[in-house]
Length: 133
Image (tube, rainbow, N blue to C red):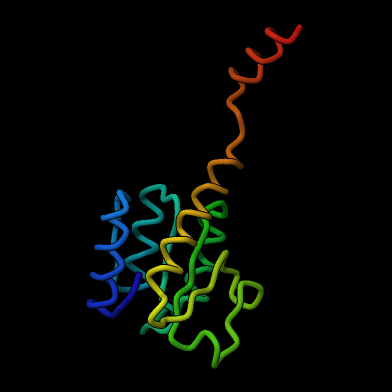
């Protein structure tokens, strides 16, 4: 989610090259509509946008879909002291020459963490109990 079309296109291209399916939004309102209608494994949002800023978007995502990891990207991360604790994001990345490498590593880390946290289905638990008895 970014109101900057060039930044949005660049991030989309990088993530699709990594094999991810990407849905884009150019406003916080549009992003919330997508999130309301479909499940996502990770949300990436810019901080400064017209209307809903990134922190407000994160707050609303946490209400709507609390389990989705969120990455906040900002050119003001250091200047404003944006951190995971102050924004509610799972990761904060500064826009810089290293943004792409930070983004790809962070997406991979959050997806691994999300996969590792998924609870086993009740049927799998029952099967595990039967084989261990």
